[in-house]
Image (cartoon, rainbow, N blue to C red; front, side, top):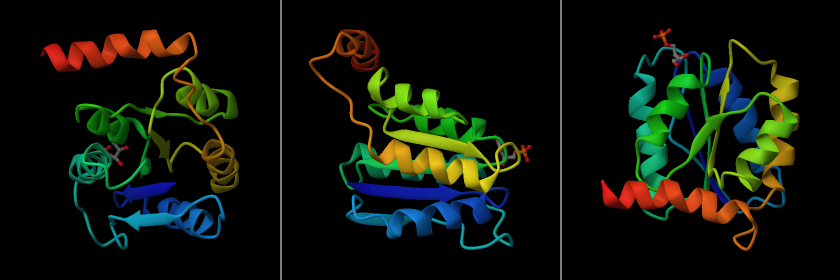
Length: 151
Ligand SMILES: O=C[C@H](O)[C@H](O)COP(=O)(O)O
């Protein structure tokens, strides 16, 4: 699994912790960090979220972990990239269903809304979840893809 990570300056400290967790995870083959590098970089969250989602859309990463103040702006931004599905998920069940129900490639966190230990636990679980294309959820997700392709 290749994972792209990114955060704005509100999320950089949590992003760095999640990146380091992923780098130490044997299930993860590659981690690409798109920044920001530190809190002095005030690049706006959509620029980072869109760049991360485009990395996935062009096939250079399988999944993304994005962090901003709430996780909301990163999710909205990533969802603008065709083929990418993203959501904020601050609980274990939602994170699991984001993969198994919605085939989301991207999970987002709000560093101002969740503690680092809970975010790390959710990410560690999330890496282990897989979407089943033969499940009943697949035809539901297909409606989203069909809409994207028609518009
Ligand atoms: O969703 C947006 C993020 O929370 C961002 O980190 C902060 O955005 P703001 O400065 O517009 O509140």
